Length: 348
Image 1 (spheres, one colour):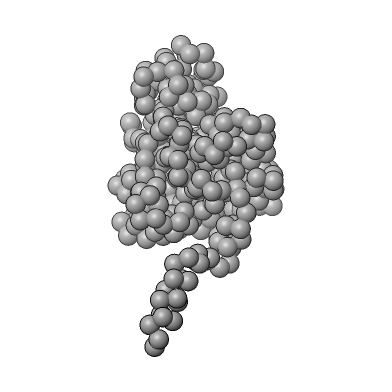
Image 2 (cartoon, one colour):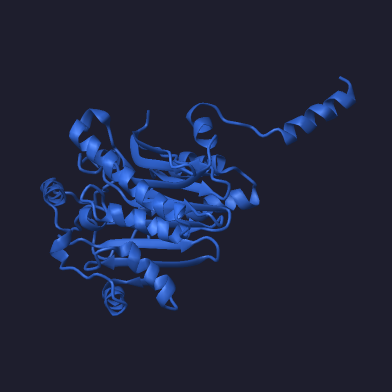
């Protein structure tokens, strides 16, 4: 073959970007300013009533609309993600804030984290039981203290001192979540049951159809080109005393820098072992992978290889979004720079 022709062909391969097909191509064709999730797991259309599906879509849409208004008004990506997550924390539909699942001891223990990609500032709280909006507490830790993470009673004391809304733990009680804990207890489980996917329960010999609820999160890109990420969760149903998952751990369940913002949902122990959020950012920075390639590498290959499952949302500095998950479904949604909102639940 003519060597000149070979050189030209190689040159064209380098300068012409590869575009994936199908749904991924559709997602990458527009500039997005926000992406959110409400958890990944065994979410099947066959098990979802039309009324509940409508409620989930309405809640996700409201979160996107509220966050988008902040961006459109010229406010920061931090304001946008905090506001969007607040909406989901205040909804009993999601495993965060008001809808948090119960621990083995019958308590609601909440975790949250937020990160500013423009300067790598971050804040998080874990194991809190009286803070109405943990994501707001995480931001307070970031902006009003010299620390990154506060836990338990100390985090609650700090939140009260800076004027955040403190509630009676009964505020977080919901019948659906309480009944789910009772059903799991009746199974006489010897191992903690996840709130994300009942496949793991089946492998342990214990079926738990309540294991489909998950973490909430948001990533936003503001008018100045700055990214921010936020994640909030109630953790696992029936989790043991003192357990903390990936959501409040910077670089694991939550991360943002100048290239990309990431919020995760899934089996926390495996996300911790894979340092999932930072791994995505590192693949993009050091291997120059696209946000779609990097997130797919981690969620579809690395996490399952260890036995874990879940998903994540990611948004890069150019407005490209990725929402991979290896479970039956994931509550998720996007909004473009022009305000176009799309909400998804199932795999197909």
